[in-house]
Every structure is written in structure tokens, then in C-alpha cells.
Length: 290
Image (cartoon, rainbow, N blue to C red; front, side, top):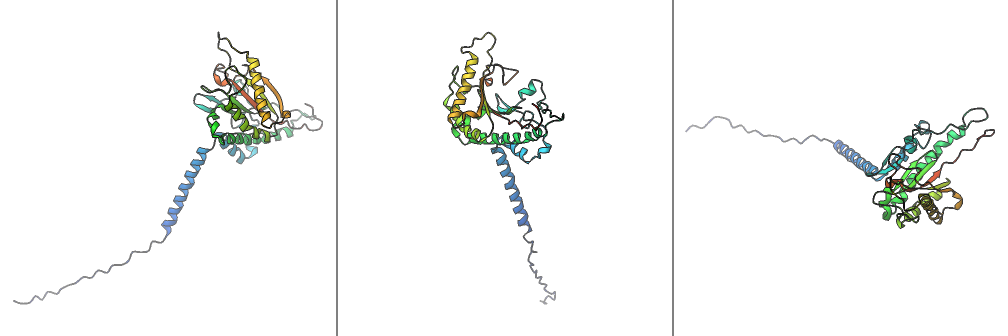
């Protein structure tokens, strides 16, 4: 047999190494993880802060000259009130009565112009009120045993100052029915906020309020004496917690004359005791008259 003369071809494939990609992807991945951590941390902080604290922070970083209003009554908070869903924003009583919520005209000076000192004092009062709101909320959060009463604490800015109200809610009252002495949980709330009130320079007024009797119903206790007695009891607790007596300017009972909900004066949240941190009056310039 003749030998084949066809040549034998052998192919050798050389394996080359992959090109080096560098570490740029690692840097991009680290930036992505950092951004995600910052995002979730921001979400957690937002969920842990109260609405008043958020608004206080926003006011702190906002220039005072760009403030949309000149008074606490028309400020960022716009007042807070209670309803079945809990603590939420509501229209202030000044607005509900048909007023604009703006401050009254500045006192005239001897030259006929507005007092510049009075106008410049307003942002300071507003900023101090925001600090008080944050401090009061923090004091309540630091006491888990009264955390459930957060729905019963209503904080509202008005032209007169900052109102801190202990409000009856459906199913939870701050005072026993017909009694001027509060529940122990109410006493704990007052003792918790007393250090914050003591640090603030504002004068205080305390007023008691009750809900109106429905038509045809007979009140077991005279409402004027009841609301005055509850206001006095709150003042005594605050005084016992360290507030000097000269910090109080008035302690009064309002009966049912100033409902929290003007459209429904019969519901339980109209029963409340309000502690007002009064705005400081600006000094009158020389030669002016009140």
C-alpha cells in the first residue's frame, strides 16, 4: 500500500489573558452603597421626628426676612387639634372666627410710624416657641409610661403666645368626670413639661375649659367653678414642680365660652386645660405711647 503524502496540520491555539479592567467599578459600587445608606438613614430620621420638630428645623434654616407671616397665629404650625384620627393640623380658632390671623397694627410712635422694635421682636418670639415645642415633645418621649398620652397634648401658636393644652380625647380623659383633681397620668405629664416651662422666660397663664352641654341635658357640676378649679389644680402641680409663683399672670375658668372646635362645641376635646407661654411685649421706644 502506498503511503499517503497528505501533510498533517497541527493548530496550536494560544490563550491570551483578559485585559485588566481596573478598580473603577469598586469605587462606583462603594458610592452607590453609601448613597443608599444615607437615604435609609434620612428616612429613619424623618420617621422618628415629630411634625413640630420638622417645622422647627425648617424655621431654623429659613432666613427670618423670608418668613411668610409676621405672627405666631399665622405661622408654620397653623395650630393643631385632635379628632378621631389623632393629632393633626387644623384651622386655628382666629381663622375660624373670620380673622386673618395677622398681628394687630403696631403701636404708633410720636412720629406716626410703626414701632420697628416691635416688628423685630416677633421672629425671636417665634424661634423661642419652636424651641419650647421641641423640648416639650422630647420630654414626653423620654417617659414611655405617658407616651400614650401624646394624643392628649395639643400645642398651638396664637397671637398671645404658645398654648400647651391637656385635652380630653374619646376614651381618655385628663380629669375624672366632675372632679377638679387630675388623674395621676395627668400629673406625670405636667411634671414632665415643668422643667421646660421653668427654663423659658415667658410668663404663664392657665385657663380651664369645658364642652358645652347638649340641648336638653343637665350638667351635674357648675361649669365655671369646675374649669376654674381644674386650672388652679394645674397651677399648683406646676408650682410644686419648681415653677415660681410670680411666673403666673392669671388662672381662670372659661366654662364653655371658648370651644376648641367651633363647629362642634359638644365633643370631648373641648374639655381641656391650657397653659399659655405669653409672648414678651417689646419695649416701647422713647416718646411713644401705648
